[in-house]
View: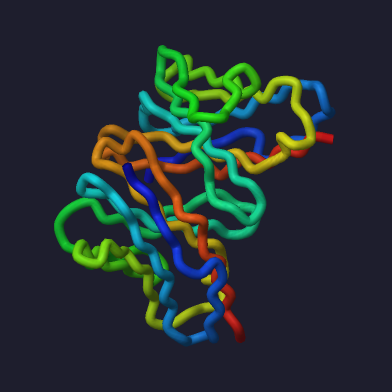
Length: 113
Length: 116
């Protein structure tokens, strides 16, 4: 079984500051890990994903995440926050069949000018 | 890139009526599609897995007679909310699995349902 925990339902950062959104997962099998972003009144957009290979994954809009098996984590980072990054971010895990996704409860990112 | 389209994006219906939401994979075939529901300020809850040509698999607690899912072709799945009530008002999102691309899942843009 898989599950995802996102620590911090709300995160506020200043424009230009580092963005760090935390995600820890639980999986009985090697997981596939994802970060999605949801802008207001819109659907989900894939930011990045980890399946196999390099544990540091780069995504769109300057985001990246690192898969750390020993810590069962897949935290999302961005060196410098932009106002346009304000959105809801969801971490998700699936098994390698892709038959089911399990989402975290989301983290709302606010960027302060 | 792959695109999944949902229609309508917003719909308002009266209590007691039924409403259909379509989910289409525009540039790939999807044998499996998924329907999620998102409550305000909460995460997505998987409602059911839709398999082309067979019955959908519903998650525990989801009323299959109320949320009818049909996956009649490799590019189209529909969700029909029957006898809608105000508590059915929610954001419904579908996703489709592209088997060509390592089981990558693509999400639709979602459909806002308001039952008045």
